Length: 265
Image (cartoon, rainbow, N blue to C red):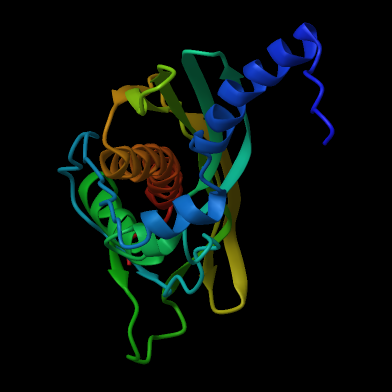
């Protein structure tokens, strides 16, 4: 009967190290982008619009009709993509980091974006402009009516979300979880909106507004994954709200200056 030869001491040591490290790598948490995306489904946030410009208190001599905004170009649902990460496996301490890129979708908003943009334009123009802005319906309008056409050309808001986890391993015992912390980086919105004022087939004014804006702060130290997902959606909605406000205020101001030169209806 043959006797099994013992492995050399160096190989035994290497095998022992693998015995401890491989379980660490195996149990390290690594969620795919699709997994996080499914877990974020159903989480919604509310866009907001704060009126801060002065109230126009002179006579209102003009009426402009706003055509329905049909497409907001925002993606239908929020998308999450894993953008890498790192693992630091030691014998008794294990650290991992997963990086995700999240893009805001319309389904994550309590109000469709095109409805929010419509409400923002109506509220802003009817507060600080020398004309009444009315949402157009099926009523037949006279040939002299002024029609505002608004089109969203680009609408994208993204943010980087980071999951950091650490766990401890003691030989002969189970894993002891250390901590799990989420970070939500500064979101960025890219928004491009075109507006033009029409009378019949004549274009009286046209302009395209393009803005890229981020928020100057991030959210850190979130332990609960669900709370992190909620903070992520809230953070992006806040960024998109401010970006929309910048463009809407500019549209209102430009139309106001234009209509000041127009004779009264």
